[in-house]
Image (cartoon, rainbow, N blue to C red; front, side, top):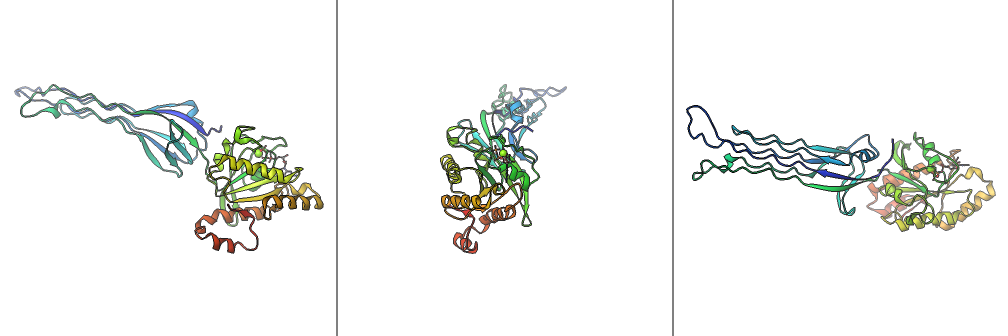
Length: 351
Ligand SMILES: Nc1nc2c(ncn2[C@@H]2O[C@H](COP(=O)(O)OP(=O)(O)OP(=O)(O)O)[C@@H](O)[C@H]2O)c(=O)[nH]1
Ligand SMILES: [Mg+2]
């Protein structure tokens, strides 16, 4: 399935049906009086969050959504039926913005959430409505009220518990493939991953969702490489797993590059709990490994974890550390108590 995380669509609710001018005509009944029914309301436009979707690709093929017009009123006091509603189906994590792309209309975060975006126009009154003691044969009926219309923007921000960040080639997709049943593409060139991927991790008797996003490079916030637009998909994560490639010459600089990009992106990413892991340690001899770990620890300011996505070294420890952070919000009210309970050293960094 193709991945698309933004879409601009046009929605319109149905116009109301027109009221009817009609008079009762029956044998032996003189001056039967008005009997024109009211028009029915136009269809509403709803949006609903459904299971089983993880892209907005459907909105690339259809961008205009119009609900039906209400049925017109008819003689014999028959009210017109309501126009059919339409419901846009979107994946979990979709945000709906006004056309200005800033005003948030809705943030759909769980399956089954449904909301009305536009109300259908009301039906017009038929001439029965206008009958009175002084006007017993009104010829007035109203047209239906028009429906509303607008352009809206959809933005999908995947919902994951933990997010992978790092330079291209840091081994993010390898880690995702090793810990979940996801099958991301892995290759030894930068920007192998072009769209975010999710996987479910089973660890410590629990499960959580891990997101892999394309690598970041220096200047990503200015659009270099694939830019930082995919960072939106880790915005909602409880914790970030920052992988640093141990085979890189300067691990401290690599770490700082990503930190800088997270800060430049904003939206609270830089302040998110972060677990830093030196990845690909299997590729180093003991001496280099110790030196690189020390370099990275100096840059990070606290101990980091050694990891190899390929051999599995350190994998479980990293997963449990992630899990601890994901569960943390429940008890996070008292951050100090949590800190104390975390033991001598905490692989996570909180701002
Ligand atoms: N030796 C060793 N190689 C690894 C390890 N993890 C990943 N690699 C190799 O590093 C290369 C890049 O791995 P990917 O998982 O595609 O890296 P990525 O971070 O997803 O890269 P992008 O998608 O381009 O951002 C591949 O050739 C992997 O085989 C590891 O733990 N040890
Ligand atoms: Mg990748």
